[in-house]
Each structure stands twice: as structure tokens, then as C-alpha cells.
Image (tube, rainbow, N blue to C red; front, side):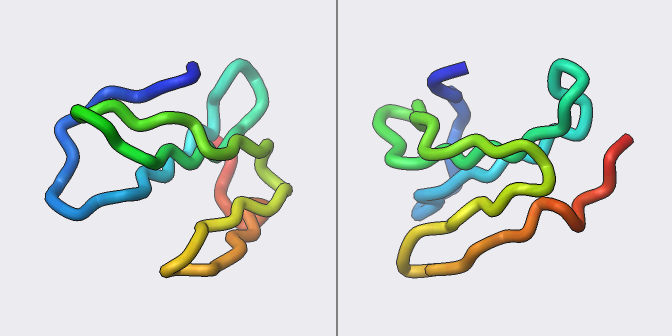
Length: 69
């Protein structure tokens, strides 16, 4: 999936999606840069990898701590 279309909350620039059942391998995808309700993929990692939220957050998420269903 290269884009996600949603009705964003005002000011919501980032949309993280945690999917513990994605094609047999759990993934975390960060969507951002919304334009007309469509977010583009900024990064995707398998659980266990690091997902970086850009500024103003500047946080590295350790996806290895997320539960796998």
C-alpha cells in the first residue's frame, strides 16, 4: 500500500498503523504528508525494527515491544 486515505483530525500530520497480522509478518507503517485526506507511506518496518517519528516528535519507536497476535 503506497497511500492511505482517511478523514484526518485537524493537525494530524502523522498516522502510524500497527498491523500484527500483515501477510504473516507483523509490520508498523508510518503515513504522513497528508494532502486532500491522502497520506503517503513514509516508512514501513517489520516488528523488531525501529520506526522513527520525524520532528517535532524526533522519537525512535522500538517495534519489538509490540504484541504479535
